[in-house]
Length: 384
Image (cartoon, rainbow, N blue to C red; front, side):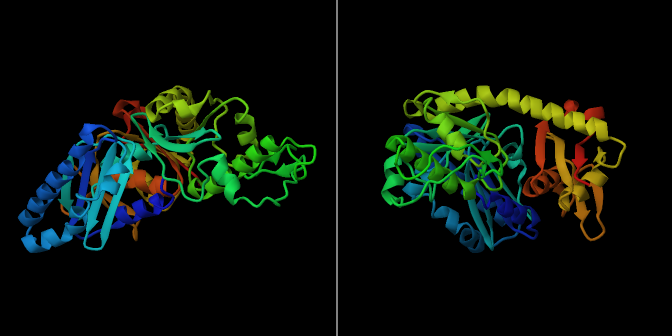
């Protein structure tokens, strides 16, 4: 995921004062259907313009506001980079687009806040995972949900061993000894010593390649805690594990040559690995909530959960899918007002909880309404 995504989400949720245009649409990654992508956006922009005019915006101003998005319609490169869904956010001082591995229904919303609920599945702790497809010929990283997969555009990461060694310093020393610290803070076992003396050159080159991959991914994954599934042939997997510094790399791998597997095939195999991991993680989080209920370190009361999420106190939270809770939150007084129906200036407080928890490094679990303990609207564990 874009490493700036968390901060940008925080800015979007805090944006107030319209007009704010939120557009969601499904996209196709290949085949003749890709031609529908710009047509869908064109239709949704026309719908957004009509909504803006109906709310009192002059048509010339509405078209000016939407002009940057209109410019995407003929951008062939932009449409070649699509995944399963596209989200577009537009305001007088905001223009952001996100290609995401989740199918969105077509939707255009114009209000005084951005509409972010369709992103909830992207934020869910038990829905997002990563796949690293590693071979000497090609490196691919995929961001996934249970419903879709998106190729991550990599920067400062070698795409093959040839590319890695082309720019690597041939004089670089590889002095790693038993007990040296790995990038994740753990202990790295001894692997290669010296500069080729008594060391198989091919293994040494692979080791350097894996180190460079890990170094390049460090910035991309620094704020992530989604599980990572490694795919590769048997001899590469232990070498990469030794170089790896990402703490959420799973033990179970996809073995075999990943170059012959499509994105969808890798996604399917990885989902079989992460699904039981997600189930166990969710059960442990709910068990922790049950243990701490009544101690002040857990709550099912939105009047406590909303301010705790806003100020970064929520460690994990369970939220119901598809159920809005309308109201307003005053951070100065740390108070919320709940309303049965949306009123002017209201926002979905469950959206607010989800995004504030996510951007502050907490875990968000999206479940069916009846699965939350004691049939509550939400359930949260606090850090303190």
